[in-house]
Image (cartoon, rainbow, N blue to C red):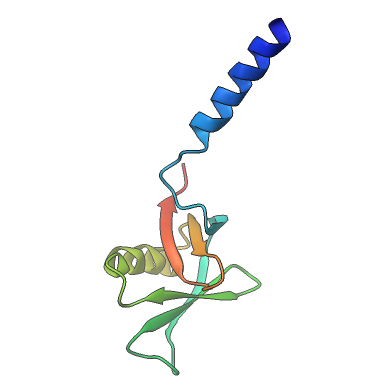
Length: 103
């Protein structure tokens, strides 16, 4: 009987934690610093290219996103001041969706 109680408690804990408010289709780059920001020559009115880290992986900020201004401010702080952030990249699109303070 104790085993069933333990399994039930474990199941409840797992299911209650899985309902987080952050989208599940993001890949996170934790403690990341932005190494470059530049206009995309192919789509200058749509996106900005953002390079993350020493290996300079390139991602994009959509100018059409409602969060563009906030995301661009944080990206600029990281690029100019070396501030680290946790950066959420949407899977399959390489679009930056979230930039969060490192706690």
